[in-house]
Length: 87
Image 1 (cartoon, rainbow, N blue to C red):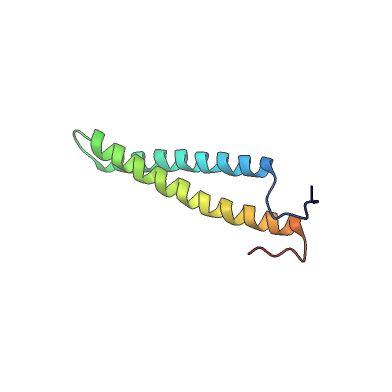
Image 2 (image 1 turned 60 degrees about the vertical axis):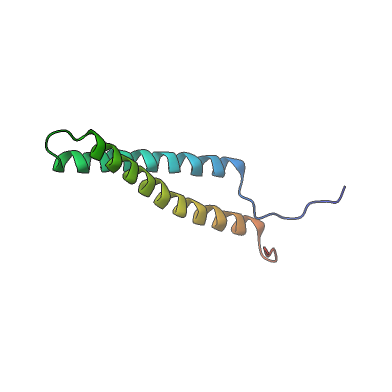
């Protein structure tokens, strides 16, 4: 079996933390989106509140996911050291 060289793959613990931060970001976006709609709506607001929560969750999780991916890539490249180039 050939010996494996340095890898740019981040550690499992870092990937788990990144996943959990994405979930927390989505939950925060859900709460913010629902609250924004609830503040502005009068009467029956269950559908608009649900849509606001959904949009907020997607935007919150998406934004945190972009940052998490950039951090994981930087961590992986830093850990691999010089001379390791990805194709």
